[in-house]
Image 1 (cartoon, rainbow, N blue to C red):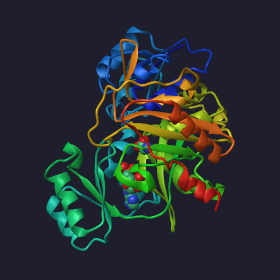
Image 2: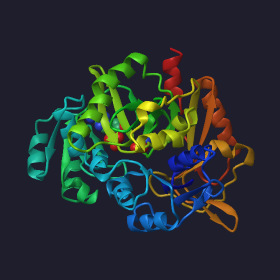
Image 3: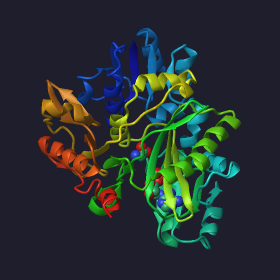
Length: 422
Ligand code: AMP
Ligand code: GLY
């Protein structure tokens, strides 16, 4: 089977490594992939948003199965366009990807179907938004409607900060047209849990839970990033919480999307907050999370391609999606300065004997040398019997990897360990 994976980060590398385990897979193409994946996939110089070229490539190369991993192509209708040409795909169609593509859509969906989430108001008029903020409870949360590279969310601690956020989104267009509509919502508190779930619109099969570490610095200080590390499973996500989420959030979301004529097939990501009033949805993503995937997939025992194809063919109920009882930890190594400005082009050394544990997010190959080519450069993942050992092993992997200006958090998993060992 010839497989095509659209996307080029650490998440895609984790998907590719897992797909490779299937004996029927003869070739994997990554569009565009990155230099750090060259041993695992054939790199194709087509950007993940170039839907026309992606489809053309798939047809010309008789691709048997396509996995569309990032939010942008999903929201742009990459799966729809591939399906028109008869190519079987993993990922939601555009009309379902909107669950991530529009926060206004997802908030209204949750309200309509009584799915627990933060209380909110939607605004398309800046004056009205500013007026609302005169009396809104503080802190408050301002969200741009559309995709904004994970940056369109501002937690405002004061009224002035909230107003400034509204002006920057609606007047200064800090996130382009994503800020034409905004959501102002209730500030929630509690531990956060990420749950990725396979769904074919008939069954939801949640994967092992995980915990992201979004801030750049130790002890959750510094700027928000795309994620500086993950652990799985998330100790806050007990069996009782999982059952509650299944009943009140996962199944109702699947049913809601069906009811709206927007059946979601693919990986649905639930960003949850375990509030004093029960679990609530902070966000939906229409795809695998990054870097959650880098700890979740290594724990998957069932063959990934088999599960994905079952989703595509709406046969998920025929399959038991099984996870290992072990724990995983992933430490992201970034380039100094990330998430703001950083330099690229530093030579990387990754010892061959640990390559299997490394998911490269941003690298280029030049004259046989691997050079850093992004803010988040790679993730080192370890799987062990318990979380403490997994964290320790992940950091010993990090010590064996070198590139100039590397930086990483030193406390990935610390909060989870404190909960477990309390
Ligand atoms: P998002 O881009 O939607 O994942 O939001 C980024 C982060 O902002 C989340 O991971 C939360 O930590 C935080 N956040 C989003 N919405 C809320 C909320 N209503 N209350 C508190 N924190 C929030
Ligand atoms: N790690 C959060 C995300 O993938 O959006």
